[in-house]
Every structure is written in structure tokens, then in C-alpha cells.
Length: 103
Image 1 (cartoon, helix red, strand yellow):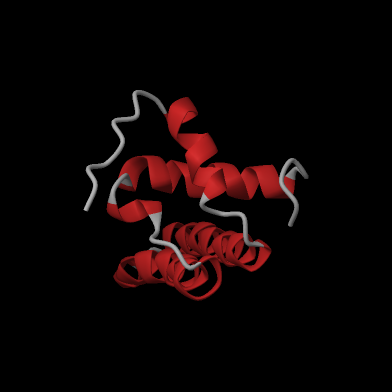
Image 2 (tube, rainbow, N blue to C red; image 1 turned 90 degrees about the vertical axis):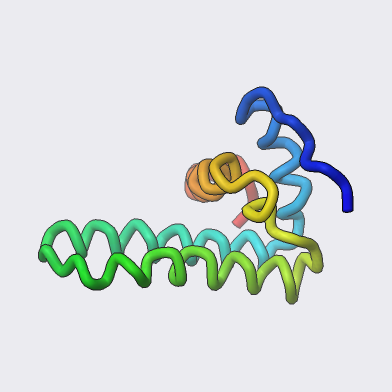
């Protein structure tokens, strides 16, 4: 097992992150998970239903990890670079929303 690449910034990490997300279905599943997370957080904070916070990671990571295991056939970056991977999910979602990355 190789050691994680020591990225010095998110800008260094993001190109590798995008290479791990070349499959369109995988990207769409990430988009779905990230959108669910945003909607859930807005709803939870608006209603004060804090008990539902435990489902936020399931909603976000469930579709994304399914995309990696079944469509992309690689390991999610979350396992080696959890913070950069989380930022990457939101950045890729924004890039898909704005048309920089095909949906």
C-alpha cells in the first residue's frame, strides 16, 4: 500500500481528484450526494431537527462511494485525504453547476 501523496494545497490536490472522477455516473452521484447534504443542512438548521445530523454523512458519502466502487472502480479520496476530498466534492459540484465540468 502506497503512502498518501503529500499535497501542499487544495490546488495541487484538485487535478488528481478530477482524474479520479472521470466517469459521468460517478460525478452525478457525487452531485446528488452533495446536493442532498446542502438541502439536509438547510432543513435541519431551519427546523432545529438536530437528530437528523447523523444522516448527513450517509446522504453525502453513500452515493459518492457507490459511484467509486461500482462505476469508477477506484477508492474514494476520502480515505487518504478527507478534508481535501470534502472540499473537492463541493468544488466539483459547483464546477458541474456552472458548466465547467460536464454533468
